[in-house]
Length: 286
Image (cartoon, rainbow, N blue to C red):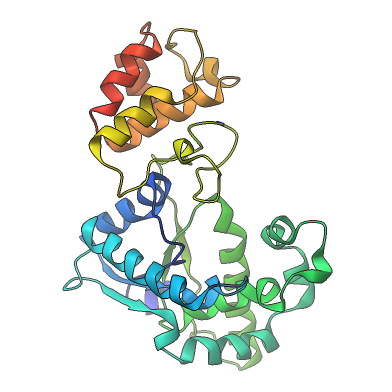
């Protein structure tokens, strides 16, 4: 169906502030590459951010910091559109229409709501529950044909596709909204905490040594890499040998992503070395 629409990429990033390496490798690095190939729209999705309480002053600062991070990482506002979601009222207006198109059964299947709401779902905001409908509005408002997604957003994009299909069918126009396709970064692996390889790198983790912030100095980055949790075993030649070594796998994946390589090539390069040698080399990549 997308053959009748001009290729257009849309992606939104919440203004969480304190951008870290996971944000860069998971999204921003890919955004820069995409703008070289096609038309792109990137939004700072502050309406999504307020599904939980936000201090207005802190939220405004986070919006500015996120935009600055975008530009610093190479997004060119002459090539891509970069804007704040709440400055375009049509996002909220279309989201309400989609609230009337989307089905409760679809939303009940969204695993991210279950994870974020936790055991006390009755205390979660309605905004958190209908968050995927707003995400669909973000994408379809511009009739975007492609959306970069990570593992945690695949289900939301599937819902977006369901909404587009239902809207088109309900109103008898099979070509009103495109059915957006996912863009999956093939060589990217999720960036995990430097203190716990089973947890995603996050600004909410208490220890600052769990993450590399984009504003960290060179010395701070080297110190964090040096203190990153690993193990005493040497680096193997086969990635299967890393299945029960999450911290080792995480550092090797980070190195591979930063050097635009693959895990297989990194293992071939580093095979047999211990992590003290690897960390010294890894810290020089930043």
